[in-house]
Length: 288
Image (cartoon, rainbow, N blue to C red):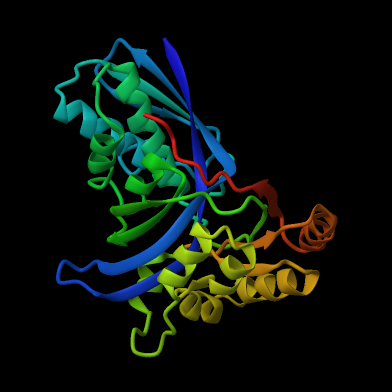
């Protein structure tokens, strides 16, 4: 038996860092929403008591470094599952891009194995297990739109924002999230207004959502990676309604309401950036 699960990417409408915690992590406050750019996870039972990762993408590790592997391992140990599993990861989300691709793969693996192994866990219970694997995994278990606090594991669900196009451009560089956080100067950053963004989402006010977008990690990544700054400037010049870096980067996204403007921005970015996507917001949560 094989089941297939969708693992959508996320973007940050806001990303704020409040302080450094005693456990070494940073206290964050971010508003995230899922978009229609998804990996596809296939889960099949195998006879051997092992976890097998299969992917055509050479940047996807096939061992315990892979978050989907870690997700399967946690469930196997927690519920004493002796059944092996083969996890096929068909990547569409760029790797190490600030779009939570690995976290979403782990979340999809947890949701899928809950079904495959008849564990009977609620989505809340799955999300709690997800928090053990990585900061964004809990959010990705639910999908939709949410305010995430703590390390990212304390989730408050929000309604879906007004539907629009999301154009994403990823330069061919990698960014170390750990380095970005390490170089963040908490004394000089301008904090986004999470409450104003939440109000804008509840009111379905697209213009206010565009106005309130903000990501404090841009202060580091745009300085150290001028190509990210360049993409952001070009996307604004081509006419996106609002432009922001997602996560720690390097992917930049723009919101676009009108189809007529979409093609011009897409074509303009394709002129100098290999990985460009035009997708819709998803915004709605997974059901139990």
